Structures are given as structure tokens and as C-alpha cells.
Length: 348
Image 1 (cartoon, rainbow, N blue to C red):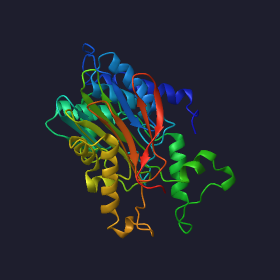
Image 2: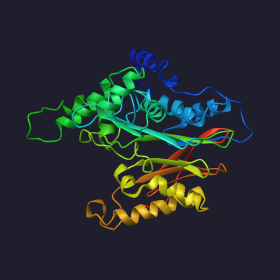
Image 3: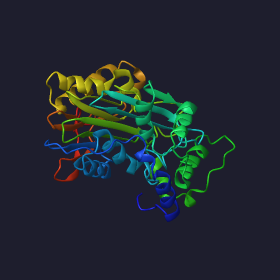
Image 4: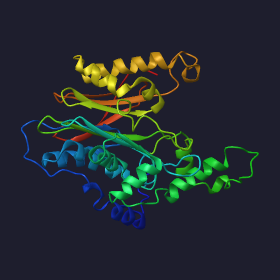
């Protein structure tokens, strides 16, 4: 599904990003003597490469994480975040994002924000320029405008076609007439074969041993308008403590909201667990509590959904894990960037 970015879309998205990522970013400082580590969800290979480049140049770990995920936010061919993200059931793209900053233990987030390509950068401004942690909807958009973030039509031609096909084929008895099957583009079929829940998380440990993290998403495809998942909720979609480590998640946000899952991962590391063991303990907690609800329980007693976690501790140890197999994470250990598999709680 890659490679469909046309020149007009590229020039438009690039122009909208110029200057945006500098809003609220700190000046670089002297590089420390610690080995930096950058981790991200599996779709974040380009993000960890960019974040590592910035960290090596003395940039703040949160600034590095934000600029790393901005690459994916600006990619119209990625339907999980930012420009090109799949819309809600009414065809409107609503974005969520959150940030946390280790040295200050600060955090900020935005939810259900429209027309802003880089919500993670807006979340940083919420952290820096308000006494609040979370702004939503029109308030978040007004705040972004006030700080110079340009408005962009986030619904690309491709995302609109995917949404329209979804809408036209939901009910055979309604008045929508779908396009003939032989005229439906392959990418539309491929995308609708599974419901997109994609998100990108990035955590950075810098050369001074300080942490920063961000999570950004367009949320669950075709969601009820106004739905907010875990990504912008501190403690659920991401969490860090500069003395312990950082963690973030992708997957079914409601499960993380009900368990404050990212907080649990960090608290596990605080108790001395390795990142892997802290993640597996959290996956087990989610698997245990979630199946009390029959709507989230399979016939075999396991969860109907998957959730993945990505964690790094103060020592630079890292791991990725999920409830079911198939998850992956991107990592840059200072030597190379690569995508590795996540450990899983269950085999299938």
C-alpha cells in the first residue's frame, strides 16, 4: 500500500509541517555520555531513525520523539495517524495525542482534534503553555490555531474512498449504492479486510539518561464521533517516570483505559521487573480483568482483542510485548535501527 504519495500531496503536507515542529521545541544542549535508546511501535522505523539523529545532536528526548512520529503523522499513505488517517463514521478525521517529559514530569494531550496534522506537537504546547493536561475538540483546535499550527484537510482522497466503501456496504437495505465490485481499488479491499486501530508510540532515553515519550493516533477507524481511546490519556496509552522508565501501547484503547496499562508497566519496572516481565505482567492483568465482560471474551475464555506494549527502563533495557503473537517494535540502540518481534502472553 506504500508508494502512492503523489507530488501535490507531498508538497502540501511538507508545507504544512514547516515551522510546526519548532513550536515549543527546546534548544539543543551539550551531549552527555550515556548511550541513547529510541523505541517505537512496529510502524515507527523512520521515527526511531529521526529521533536518534536528534538525540545525538543534543535535542530534548521529548522533542526528538515528537519529531520522529511527525514523519508518520505527515505520511498520507499511513492510515493510522495524522494526514490520511481513517475518519470517524461521519467521514471526519479526529486525532488524539499525548506527551510526557521526564525531567519535569510534565504531560499534555489533545483528543478529538480536527484539521491539525501534528497533534503530538500540540500536546507539547498544552503541557508547556497551559496549567492543564488535556484539551479536547473545538477547544483543542482553537488552542492549536492560537499557537500558529496550520489547519489542513486531513481526509485524503484514498482515505475518503475507503470510508465511503465502508459506509456504502454496511446495510444492503439503505439508499447508498456501492461502486461495482470490479471497480473497487485493491487498497480499499485490503484496508477494509481488517478494522484499523493503528497508533504510533515513541519513547526516547537520551544521552543524559532523561526520558520523553509520545503517542499519536487517528483512533479506531469509523468510530462514533467523539470517541477517545487510550492514546491521549496519561497512564493508559503512555506513561513515564524519569527515575524508572517509559512505556506506551497500541491496540484496543478501551482495554488500556480500564486498566491504566502503561502506568502498570512503569510501576512493574519500579518494582525491579525487567521491561519484558513488566509488560507480560500487565498483559496478564488485562487478560484477566477484560474477560469478566462477555463482550470481550472468546469462546475459549481469552480476550477478543490484542494490545501491544513498548517499554524502556532507565538502564536502557527495552522490550515489546503483546497478548497475542504478531506484534513488532522498532528500536534504535545507537548502532542501527531495526524492527524486532514482540513477546506474547499467548501462543494463539
